[in-house]
Image (cartoon, rainbow, N blue to C red; front, side):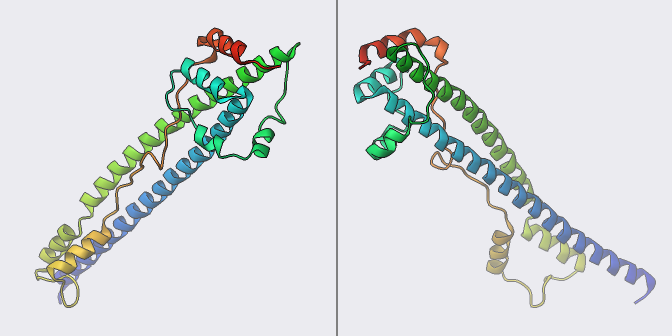
Length: 228
């Protein structure tokens, strides 16, 4: 082998190594980005659980299913957020929902109004934050899948194999060669799967109006259902 042949052989090795290094570098990046997305989803689900507890406290404060229904009608919500989960809570656990809640007002009636208003305000604020989190996760998911598509196109095993075989001037790139089915299997294993998030994986937070937009109507409902 003369100097020229050795240079060509060294170049081939360098090209192969660069392909492999790039493949694993890009794959590690996608794995880390996928893990980051998972962390965001887990944080969102934890915050959604906290929002659910706020709703439980609101339902407990309202005191009856009729009062809950009247409030939901004001909010134009046909589906009562987390209400079925609330109904499954034991009476003892329901009592604990409001034990540590601060009360303020000169009369028992005013304390009742303020308790409901405070809970509603907290729910509205947390819902807004959750919707912002939801939108950011949706954007992250879209960008991640775009990167995955680019990765799968750039590192298509069949295409890489054909390029290396052409460079080598022979019909096999691994000892003993690879049959069509084997190539397809290896190509599938090398591909990175697109990430999907169903509504069960990422439930949207209920949307409710700001308290200032319906405080008068909400107070009218509370007046109807207040029980000393």
